[in-house]
Length: 304
Image 1: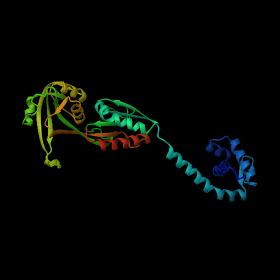
Image 2: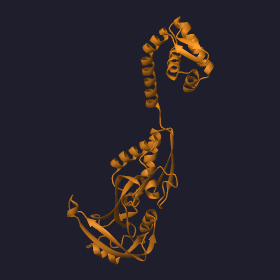
Image 3: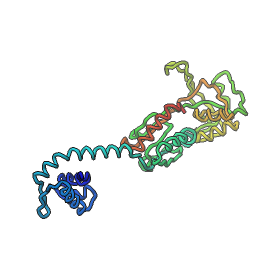
Image 4: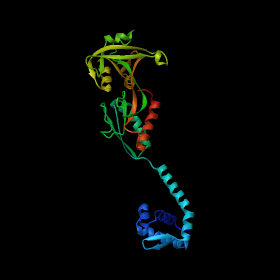
């Protein structure tokens, strides 16, 4: 009967550690089990491998030769097992992520579903808020932000562009086809984060692929309603409270639902990019997987 692989591996570990106690700790076994394995290996080989003296031991000539013959095979076996475990190990744990509410509800939620279906041992703890969250202080792994970054210490990867488009209520369009973009200054707006009852908005009209070929205009618009949330702004515009300049995702959603109509579709505002943001480059594997998944998902989704 061939000797046990466990007994051989134990023998190699004892020789490496030069101590039964150290080998037992390394293997996670009782010292008595290590000792029994050595005795059994010698019985299986019908040879004395170790010369025992009190708490010490020394290799016999046979033991030294046997060690030299088997150590490479034991190393190769351990490496193969380690690589297989790493390959089969599914990352697990919870990822804490923050994002704006509208982006989370309208774009990220379906992506999260697809990600969770792919990785059964990963959980998501999602904080949807319009405030700028301190990633370190609040223990957030990653943030999706639709704004210009002001914190130089953060690491950001661009997901897509955020395009703001003009829309009005389909039910109460008013003069939905004015001839001149400046005529919008005479119409009421639902304002977003204005400092008063008026606001300056900058729009661009693309004539070609080059940014140098684009024409821009600044309009001073006013309104009776000022909100800090684009979802609420879209609802107010759909209810006929004025023209709205809002993210493309809200315009597409409103048009599909038959509640909004785009005006001056050739004009838009590219106010910011959407970023994936971290506090550090050293991320757990589960966070890396989510990040790569979101980057690929936004690449196929397009601008928001």
